[in-house]
Length: 512
Image (cartoon, rainbow, N blue to C red; front, side, top):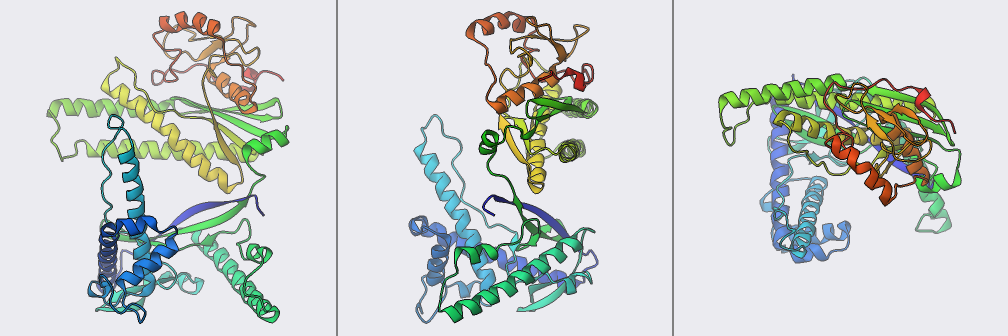
């Protein structure tokens, strides 16, 4: 039970386009009230920054802010009356506004302290004060997600109607898998409610006021069950949506480094990402059981063609006008291409890893992108976006793998594509026709030859095992002349779009 992590997925419930004018006005009025409340408490917290920064916990800060802004018998004269701004706001929504505002202000104050403590030469831009967040967080008391309502296509929300707060049925359109998630959540919440009542009765009979650690653990959701959390009401253009996060407790075997030391036969997959391909190798102990290659050279070349079109149109239209977006349709196409490709690669990697029974995924640690000189604008931007794409793939894989109980770790990629996976000596990367991307690898010491991208995936396993032999200073000096002759082509992991070497296969993997 202690080795459990929390995986989160979000289900978007679109408010029906056929919503009547009255309920649409209620949503607008509720969002206006929320923004007014968050703006009020943001301004109050900024004016009392010293007190806000001193409070150790969010719960105590919430109590202190309420005592200063809400009239109660204990505090009949608040410092700044919230009732003058939102007179009839429910307590649950008011506290949600306090938490949203105080959290944003505390984050701003922390960033401001770090900015002031940094040296003048290393300072970035001064942090800006927080602005009211328009998204309404509907905690318990503002929304009900019951299957009795959801099965008929409705969600009950506490909204403003005619100056009064009322419960209204809002029609929503949900994806087909949402029904199963809501059914699991309702069953699990009902089980926890019954168990909590039994514990209270037992505690009253025994004269106890606090639960034991075993009783508190029993109230946690069961592993593998999705439980709905507080949704968020979001306005997108002229439409509305309710984003419902679902949490699942996923059992894992412990931290990756601890498992590596305790389980020598752990099933590991190493993944090497490139501009035109993604190579993954699965390992069982010290034996490589297979290599899989995913190609994205076509999408990479397609992105560069569109970027050339953007550059050509921009040259014809002259200097860009500040405040106006040029080639918006082409940029939307590029962003959509990258987003779809990132999810496709991540889904393919995870599907293959689950089928192979992988327990740990090892990726390269992505350093900040360093652009190369002497490239055209379209090629430079294409390589930059290709580099960003790898970070998106890693983020998606990390999220999807967590739901399956698979750990994702990163290792330093230094020299992984230049060291021989058999003997460890530095080799040479080359292209068969001496043109384009150096996709092949040859070791001058032992004669091993294979795909250069597969070499990086195989060497990542040594990085995972902590057995990778880094080259000596003499070996680095011997490798430098060949790197200079190729004008950095061997050192760069990027290549010209659409130029790739031979396909990888399991024959490229060295036998243990």
